[in-house]
Image 1 (cartoon, rainbow, N blue to C red):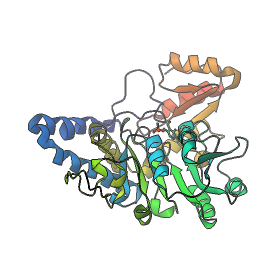
Image 2: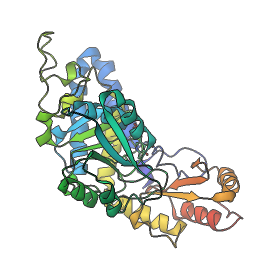
Image 3: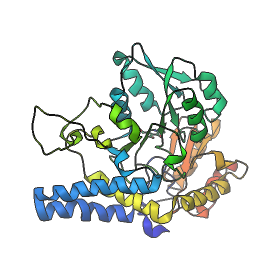
Length: 365
Ligand SMILES: Cc1ncc(COP(=O)(O)O)c(C=O)c1O
């Protein structure tokens, strides 16, 4: 399957949870769909580029089962979340947002920074398992307005049963948001199976699309009620109307756009999404699980995202050095070593991880 990916030189590439390898298609698309139209047509490339941006939304819709006009390009998840929260109808008093303390910190930072706008972050403590629906129920007090579920946790690998947690929260009248940064592209997602209001994602990790091509999905029924305050001509129903006295929101999720969008990241990322569609997320997950299971046979990875987050304790420096000696691409957060397997990884890569975790001596690679 290596014909789909450009894997950097060195040891095994175990870093898809941080940044997926560039796809062959992504590299081609950057040239063919971004640079070539610009070189050939200069400013007349815009209509082509805008069609490309729509193709990106269409590919996401195909992958995730939403509607193309429910997706909006965003630079990253944090920006998408911030814009979404500020678009909500205002209430008297604080708007409380519940997330687990193991959620990606940036998502919490967004809420805390909106304190002046009366948003308040409420955290489920670290010692309560984030994938246990009962834990969420225990924290869904009347004053909670919104919950943000992290589908796959970046520091532990824990996978949340989004559908179940969302159903419980919805039955209590809460707005439900989901962060799929660590799951999209490796864990099958079908949006119609989730009763949720908005989803935030990017293409950086398992979609192998590079940084800059973030996105958000917003439930279409809700769109008329949402009024983003960070706007620009591209969030206008007709960006080319050019009447400074008349701003009218796009009727689609494009209302969450603002000024001139960046194009290059979406050209590359489209290649990543199409590669994912070609391979099939079910197949990517099957291969990922097979390799995870080789690396840690005693662990049930079906309730885990695509990544091994191994708390190496006092062995962390040894493991870190052993992986570096193998020139492996991996990362470390404190005592936790993180490694992940995409389809381009081999059983040998998984065996290497296994041997390093379970013994102090390393195998030949
Ligand atoms: C679970 C999760 N959410 C969000 C992000 C990134 O957010 P942003 O796109 O705002 O950088 C990451 C990045 O590692 C992540 O793991």
